[in-house]
Length: 415
Image (cartoon, rainbow, N blue to C red):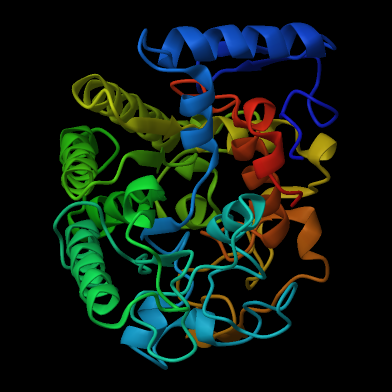
């Protein structure tokens, strides 16, 4: 079972400056479990709803449907535009799969670990025509996808398009089941209602604003509500199709990414004690607050649904603040790169070669990716994704709070 972040790998008391609150971690297991149950009852339990029924609904997910960008793309962009993406080439996938498998990491992504932790196989990309099995869900994520209705340079499959793909998929499944009966590669229709719908998107919207619209960290604040509104609209659209359980991921600390630290303007005075650029993190914190507020409004509006904000920012930033405790030697330096302070150059992406600064350089992987938080300047390593998933599945970073590891122990698998 996944261990809460307070245990073993956390100091007794941590002040999370970015999130603005104290995280207390004491050896009070029984008290924590009791408080978890009390908060759960007060938050979720309606007078006419039995605790057993509500817990069962929140524990049992017959399928997972994922929407997102490169942080959760398991091959969607590859099957759409083959031979055009970095994740098709070595050294991507080297740590776990030992070959490229169209994932932007040295191994598994967060969605892979979440699926495994919930007892499901890896999700097949929706557009993959060969060797796909959608019995336990589908992955609509596409690298470079934005939440806003933007046709990005990398991917035309923004969140609005992904939601439409989901609607078509659901209709096609319904028709196939009606005409042919149960199929061993398709989900049952109940999966679309009781399944878990995960949205992890937004990072590419920031990149679009900074790079294509040439916004700075002050100007981008007016851009943020549009991202939040797009995600809110996606939740509403999915709810109208019958979906009732949602996990919506926030955006992690972008000011700590080697990509941001190498590509975007900042001064030494902008850096905090961890080496992260505060202005870019502050923008993300503002965005996450807007997103959390929007999801809270939707939760009040749709009382029969579970709309959960997942705080990945606090988990990742805490791992950066306490890197040795988590076994990381490098947090703002990419494993795969070409040298420099952050081992990253935008002109030479991981696994590629190019002429930059008068030299012909090749971006190569580090010797031991397990000591790195960041894989290629943007995406997390296999080990970082595993730790992130463990702490998410502890339930300690859900808002509204849902202690899934305590209330659903038989449904959480070791990862």
